[in-house]
Amino acid sequence: MHDIRVVRADAAGFDAAMARRGVEPQAAGILALDEARRAAIALTEGAQARRNALSREIGAAMKRGDRDEAERLKAEVAAAVAAAEGAEVEAKEAAVAEALSVLPNLLDPEVPEGRDENDNVVVRQHGEPARPNFEAKQHFELGEALGLMDFAAATKISGSRFVVLKGALARLERALGQWMLTLHTDQHGYSETSVPNLVNAATMFGTGQLPKFEEDLFKTTDGRYLIPTAEVPLTNLARDEILAEAVLPLRFTALSPSFRSEAGSAGRDTRGMLRQHQFSKVELVSITRPEESDAEHERMTECAEAVLTALGLTWRRVFLCAGDTGFSAARTYDLEVWLPGQQAWREISSCSNCREFQARRMKARYRRGKDNVLVHTLNGSGVAVGRALIAVMETHQQEDGGILVPEVLRPWMGMERIPARM
RNA sequence: GGACAGGUGGCGGAGUGGUCGAUCGCGCCGGUCUCGAAAACCGGAGUAGGUGCAAGCCUACCGUGGGUUCGAAUCCCACCCUGUCCGCCA
Image 1 (cartoon, rainbow, N blue to C red):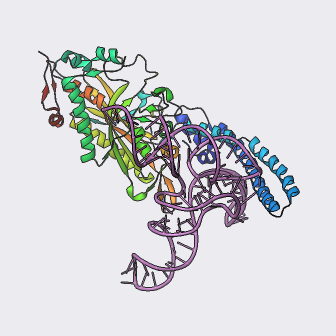
Image 2 (cartoon, chains in turn orange, brown; image 1 turned 30 degrees about the horizontal axis):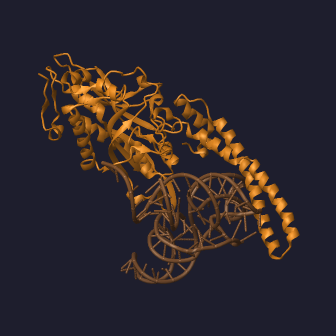
Image 3 (cartoon, rainbow, N blue to C red; image 1 turned 90 degrees about the vertical axis):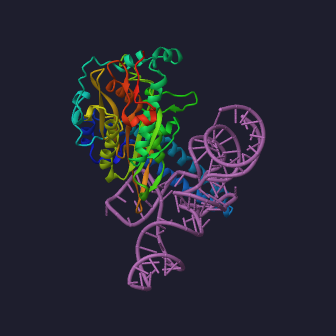
């Protein structure tokens, strides 16, 4: 959500910022709506002031028993009320709000120019893509050979883009989630949080999923939505709050399922569990003072990177370009992990600083002296459990189809290796 | 699901048709006192929007949305939420 004052103050700058996103110029249209809105407000409020004054006079007239005068004034009030209603202030305010709420966030100046993922910039890499002396398999080949990853069963139960994990792979998923959550709470200062997975429309508006991206969500029959990420409930903890400065920064983490309709990605990544309607994810969310958010963004990204390093994965940090940065974000780092079976870098985490974009939608503020100031919100995957499972399988696969369990997961797995099926 | 009781400013809590944006307490900000702090005392302070160079003026907001009325925090209706009890149920 944008501040109309920003558009008024620098229309050309606003359009230039939108252009980086590939969005057509908006300022002129918004300013026209704003003019109409303000004119309607002036008209209506003048009429309301007249009505209020007349009402007071009526009260006075009644008090002294002057009924004729009171009746005469009532007629005048009726005219004022009609004028106020004719201006249609609400519709005009809604038009401005709508226009401002469907536009993406302003990008940080440092965000690289570019149209799509090909223009993203690698800023850091950990490890080198492995060159095993055997042909690395993809995770679904491994999982199906182990008899522990069953897509047919999931299709029967639910449909495409779901999976049933069994035995050691089900346990591996649980181990990953538990271990990551423990890492972030015990080592990284995040507060463990258990959140609803079903939220209302106001919550979805707060983080920016609504009104523009409703088709990406699953909606329930009673008008609620399944969360596409725990970012949604975690960030909305601050909605409509005025926080004490001393509590900032707030850092939350949650392990939750994420539900995505994947509308528009038909035919993409259809094999395996890379792109599912439901997956498990450990999410990180920070609520900070404005001056802290850039440092917090780096810190958060490093917390996610620590997960990948500890799992023995090969990864790189990518600075998303203008065209690839998400709607609510001012700047985003993706973490990509190397998948030896697929011979490709794939996104496993995305860490974004949304600055005050979500906070304005949510009215999430903190008290600084006598002022109420919008907080900054950040979110990052720490990390996606489903994709971490894939990465662990493909990275630590052995020639016989067994999978070596990373050291950090062994206490949770109760085994050093998922043995190949005999 | 049924029956009651409620939803008021950062928090607590008054207010039942006419200067009520709203008494009061806590907390908050400024000041007096003090070497400093605490206490005490004095003063200030809601949010959003419109207008104006500014001081200021105006409008809206007492869960949400309608309605009655010249006028609604106050009356009526619907919905949402909270509490208590009952029923049902992981």
